[in-house]
Each structure stands twice: as C-alpha cells, then as structure tokens.
Figure 1 (spheres, rainbow, N blue to C red):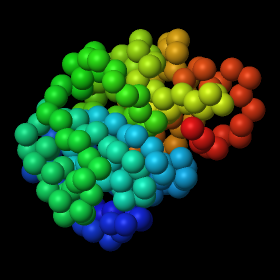
Figure 2: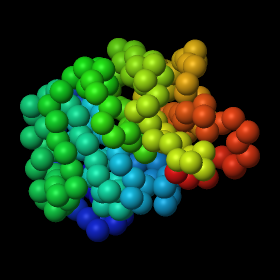
Figure 3: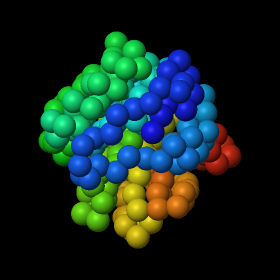
Amino acid sequence: MRVIAGTAKGHRLRSVPGDTTRPITDRAKESLFNILGDFIVGARVLDLFAGTGAVGIEALSRGAAEVVFVDKSPAALRTVRANLQHTRLADRAVVLRADAFKYLAGPIETPFDLIYIAPPQYKGLWAEVLRALDARPAWLSSTPGGGSGIVVAQIHPREYQDLPLHNLVEYDRRKYGSTLLCFFESTRQRIGDTKPDNSLTR
C-alpha cells in the first residue's frame, strides 16, 4: 500500500494491525483519483472509518486543502497519525477519535467537498451513513454555480442495494475486483444538470 501520486508519491503506508479494516487496493485508489481529477485540488475531505488513512492521505498528496480523519479505533488512529508523519502531510490533517454516526449527528461547522466512507463489510453501515447524510445534506458543499460536494462509498459488490434517498442521488458506480465504488451527489446538482459523467466540478 503506497501513495500513488503527488507530493508524497511512493511513500509506503502502514497497515492497521489485525483484520478489522479493509484497505483500498492501489488499483481501486488510482482509479478513484483518476475519476476525481482536479476536483480534489483545494478540496475539503472527510475520511470516515479512516482505517489506515490511505484515501485521505492520497487526497492530501494530490493537493486537498484539508482532510478530517474519523475513526473510533485507537489502533486505526495510531496508524493514521504514523502515516501522516511519514508522508509529512500532518499539517493539513485533523484526526478525530469518534463514532461516525455521532460525528454526523453533530454540528456542521464547515461542509465537505468529498466524503469518503469505507465501513466494515456486511453490516449495512454504508447504507446507514448514506441515510444519515441524506437527512443532513448540508454536510456537502455547494457553490453559487450549482456545484455540489460528493460522497463515495467503498463496499463489496455483494453489499450493494438501491437506496431510497431524497437529497442524494447515485450518479456513477465502478467495480474493481472485490471493491465497488458508488458515487453520490446532492440532488441540487442534478436539477437541470447537463455536465457529462465524471466531470466533477465544485
């Protein structure tokens, strides 16, 4: 597991001890950031169920303005902090020990351009997070030009289900082996939207 591009390119990342996390593969991560493109530059990112912090660290390496890492596991948080120090990206990171759902139920001080969720598999947690965000769409940024922040859920393909959401809409889905990435954005962006798929603009 390594940083693929940007200022920390080539740095190898530590894994969380044990088998409680599911790190994203380098192939899936590279494809994710190829899709995001320049959208990530200057973005504010929330890495929920952060695990190793690989996605948030890749975002920082590629020019994200700030990443907030949230996990309730002390071992995961120690790994995130070690990886941030190793990549010299800690100055633009906030690392929080918190339950993801309690965090999302808390005050919304500044919205995010990208929210990445990769919870433990086969527990339906990804769907619960999407419902929580759907109930509080103000977690996602918006711009006067109609741009919207996005949510990306990393799940196993067998976990997928159609979700009846009101304020979020799924607009893309990509499968990389045993990893499925599902892309959501605010319905505010989709009304009258004519932009091509994967043209992610804030």
